[in-house]
Structures are given as structure tokens and as C-alpha cells.
Amino acid sequence: MGSSVHGVVKVAGRRLEVTEELTGVEQGKCLRRRGTDSPIPYENETRFAPVGGGTRVTWHQESGSLGGVFGSLADTVVAKLYARDVRSNLEHAKALLEAEETR
Image 1: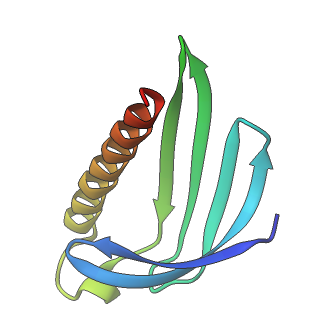
Image 2: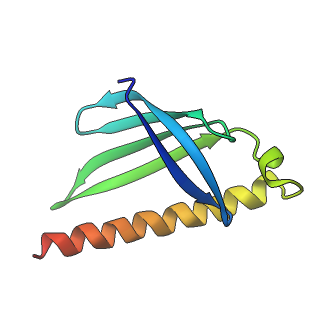
């Protein structure tokens, strides 16, 4: 709890530097984080649940207004683009992890 990480994320084609803090841990079940130094306020949660012989990963994020960062783009448009990017990243991570299991 309280650990932080700094990184760069891409949202709707724009690179944003963010720092987030670990705010909650349920060992083997859930991680909660919040942006502490980010142009967009956010909190997110990653949940892990056993399913068959694997693990289901569920990711959820709540964000504040995006409008100031993206000018005239509406929050809903940017949020949909970001959701698409997150889904693609999670699918890519799944493929990498499953490929590693077969080695």
C-alpha cells in the first residue's frame, strides 16, 4: 500500500505521463490504484478470479473529466477510444501470458 509507479499511457493517440499510487490490495484477488500526478483524475481496479484452469482478469476505471486535456473532444468519445485501447492491451497481455504457458 502506498507504493507508486510513474509511466506513460496513450489515450486517443496522445501520450500522457501519469503517476499512480497503490491504494488497496486483496492478496490474489484485487489491486486498486489512483492517479496522483496525472492530467486526468482516475481510480482503477484490477480483479483476478480463478476460472477453469486459468484466471479471469477484470479491469475497471473511473475517470474525471477529460475535456480539458483533449480540447474540444467530448468526454464520451475519448472514453470510448481509451476503452478500446485498454481492451486491446489486455487481449495482447492475455496472448503473451498464454504463449508463455506453452513454453
